[in-house]
Image (tube, rainbow, N blue to C red):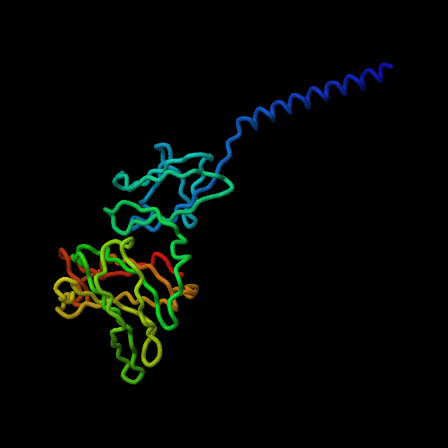
Length: 276
């Protein structure tokens, strides 16, 4: 009889313990916060000096993926220059754990506010015709190309195997290119293939208003030393569709081939924002 009592008593105690921990678990779940991810792909000239605040405090921003993790619900993010503290933009997102959103954070110049773009912006754009690239361009090199509109002379690079000399052949003239990608449309550029063409594309510039060429420090037509080689650099761009913006690139020293501004020497660098 005593043995049966001990067994019953032990069973009763076990039930109490299970009930207690069940209640504790329920209370924990009632206070549980579900987190979701938001992806901000960094395409800022500030690079890692662009930072994010959430609820007024800096938040971890994962390099590479651009992931930030915050509680579900409405979330406001503040983007700022880590060096100066200047706020460059804000973005409010409805965070849903099962449906993470992705934004491309675009800032082509230090003083520009950040813009939040759809990384799949070109997804519905038709492919370029056979033998052409389809390209949207805008000028963000305001000091070096201080014109409201520029004409871009698209050059194909050629290499002579007998003389080992480089030369350039005009492929297209893109007229009246402005200062904002959002205002621009796609243009067609013939692919530099066959003959002595290397496959590289380079750019020269002129003022759309006056028709005057942009000259280098040596007084000759300036041709950017940054070769754009779509077939090699972007082999997965099956549609041959590109969005490109032009920014200044400071060179290490004086050269007749570069552009001079304020005692410093620069090139114009084409940066690819989207490729499909």
